[in-house]
Length: 90
Image 1: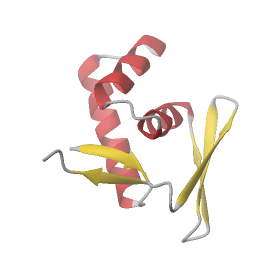
Image 2 (image 1 turned 135 degrees about the vertical axis):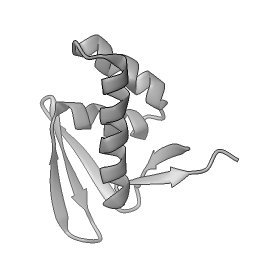
Image 3 (image 1 turned 90 degrees about the vertical axis):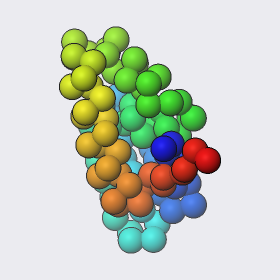
Image 4 (image 1 turned 90 degrees about the horizontal axis):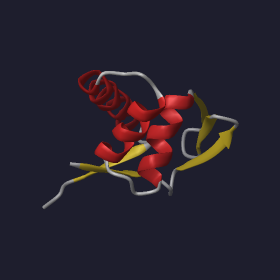
């Protein structure tokens, strides 16, 4: 499974090390902490989850398994809010 940023519905803006998402359809704003911003921005730039994980592990002192568990949780939440879209790798 791969993920893409929902550019038709969501705008992403960087504010320092953090970010803000605006959902055009629901008229909602979401503040992203630094880690979530790296995940969303990485997916928007076409990075793989492994590449995003490597960036986060080099930036923070975090265990590899914990890193990917946290990425998976974040992605699930972003998919539920239609910020990210799932794509099957068929």
